[in-house]
Amino acid sequence: MDEVLNSTLLSAVRDRLDYLDALVGKADETSKSVLADTVITQMTGAWRELLAAHELDDRGRCRVCSPRRLFGRAACTVWRTAHRRLITDSAERPAAGRHHYRCRPGTF
Ligand SMILES: [Zn+2]
Image (tube, rainbow, N blue to C red; front, side, top):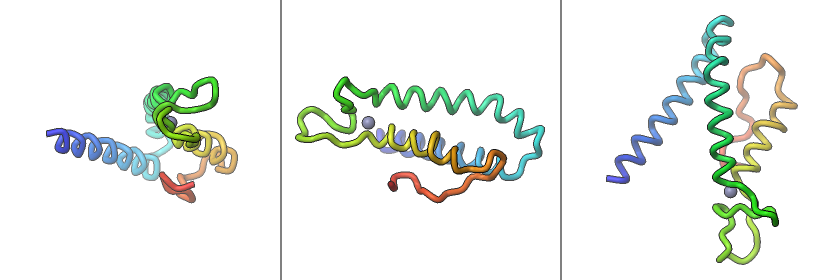
């Protein structure tokens, strides 16, 4: 049952992202503006919830990505991805450009 639920959930999220990517690529400027009004809030909310789930402790350790039982410290991939996608890529990306997929999710 969990596998079916997880599969449905993953599929729904991926389909939504594909839909939004397609809209950004094909929509006129008015539609993009309307889309931005709703989707930006959804995306910032999603990022905040995800980052809260990966909150770093006072030693800079994420309890999800680097549990205490493991020796050493693994960098939190969520915070690294957030920094790359929201800060680094934004600085390099033209303001009105299309998405570019130089970096694929899960690769650093
Ligand atoms: Zn983490």
